[in-house]
Image (tube, rainbow, N blue to C red; front, side, top):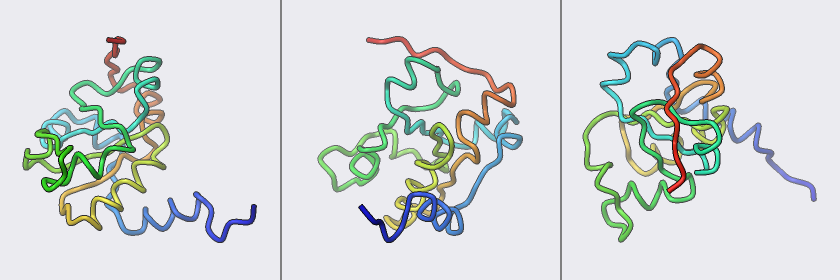
Length: 132
């Protein structure tokens, strides 16, 4: 299969359009309090690796449906006026997701540079997620 555009190009293009937050910025507790942290990773990643304390899990495949008030799947967490900070494992899914959010009209959305891996590498706290 020959692709016209690969994922790396899609991510690079999205990163040109979306706001990024560095791990250093997010390590500041005040920064975490002013944002709604959204973990886009698969639930199995959360069970295996944990998550950033205080974050809300929103599976990437459901984000557009949970964020749209017109959707039958709208989630009340998005009624909160806090700016959104999306993250995934490496920052690829979150860059693409932040771009989609902006296209949907979400004005205050950013993504975490380097994702959860960068957070952990910088010594950020990790909260365990237990299987239910």
